[in-house]
Image 1 (cartoon, rainbow, N blue to C red):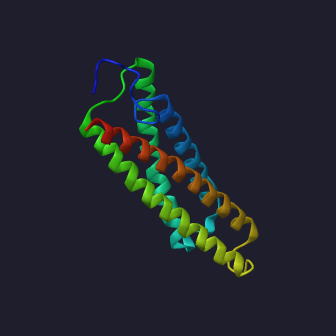
Image 2: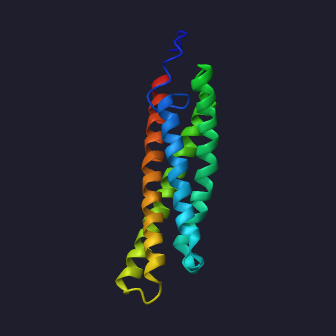
Image 3: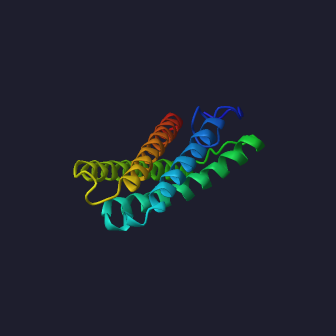
Length: 159
């Protein structure tokens, strides 16, 4: 119930400082994952790596856009409370969380397979970069899942 309290945005819901921290972390880890994966030219040879690059390319603008909304909400002191917009944010967070987890898992599985083959299909330098990329993707997924949970909790508590 909105009784004029501007601080009731929820711990990690859109429009709070917690959400801003989560969104910045998502953008940083997604960018790092994309950077580590894109440094090697060989990632085009594996579908899982292309999938990871595509998903991280979607997560970055999503997180940056919502981070800008959070910056505005935190500094102006007017958290986002429109139910329709919050539902879109929850659906977007949930969808991107699921596909980023799938991309991170598939990339980690391919990396494990490449390492099991003792580097006969990929150089150890690229495998190390791919491992860092998958790790950053998992960290990005963790923050995105937290954002989705906080926003879902916020929407459910408002209705």
